Amino acid sequence: MKCLLFLLLLAVPALAEFTVVIDPGHGGQSERHHSDGSQKGDGSSWNNATAAIYGYLEKDLCLNYGKELAWALHTSERAKKLKIRPILTRREDKHLSAMTRAAFAVEYGADVFISIHFNASHSHKAQGTRAYYCSADHPEWEYVHFKNPYADRDRAFATLIANTISTTLQPYGAKPGSAQAIGDSKTDGGHLKDGYRILGYARQDSHLYKAVMILVEIEFIDNPEVAAWLLSPENRNPARKAVAAAITKAICDHLETDQPPKNPRKSR
Ligand SMILES: [Zn+2]
Image 1 (cartoon, helix red, strand yellow):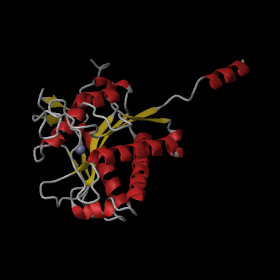
Image 2 (cartoon, protein in one colour):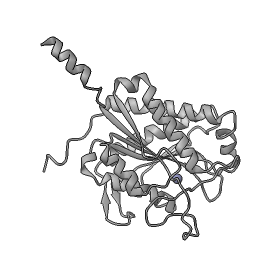
Image 3 (cartoon, protein in one colour):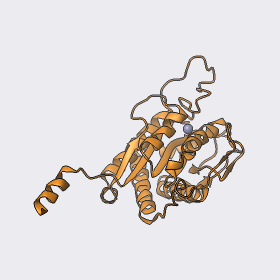
Image 4 (cartoon, protein in one colour):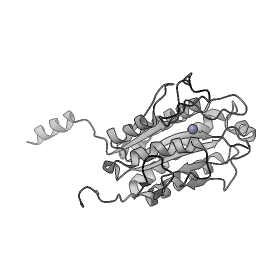
């Protein structure tokens, strides 16, 4: 009997306990008939910010950071012990709609959903990490008056990740105290509305009650000062690896201590 059990254990691969869906923002090419370069209507533009110096496109940086995070989660001993399975919504330079990105969270049963972006501002002078989550109440949501019953959890996770990234980037040049977790998009333009659309689509699926979902803007790459320290040849790779390692640690901290809410479908 013991021998049979042993054989059975060998035959069953280690199952994932937790799934982290990583969504590198943007991607692909602008559709020609949209003169502003967006892909309006599907909630996901091909690119948004461009670095003030070095010329990097946000979509490429998102993919680099996303892959680095997936690799860190795949190789970290702590993440392995927790049986974390990282899933990327894209691995190449291609466009995905907001709904497709959200569908990854649903299909793979995400415990954590992180959409990765880089920011830009009208003044080109803003700086700091921003992590966005769906507020409890969403009057600005375009299609329905959307409520997020898990806003407190999402806010706590957004705060954790924003502070983690900001602290990690301080040795490279990030200003202390510049991180923010933000739960409404009233003061921001269409780009964040698009981001919220991704979170909103995913948040409306009641199967994902255990998940925390955020969109993180690592830094403002249109600010020349930020681009100079974040994207310089000497800092670019170490900063990206440090951020991936720090987010991995924060995700492990969250999953180890998390007390997920009860399944809302069972309480009906
Ligand atoms: Zn973006």
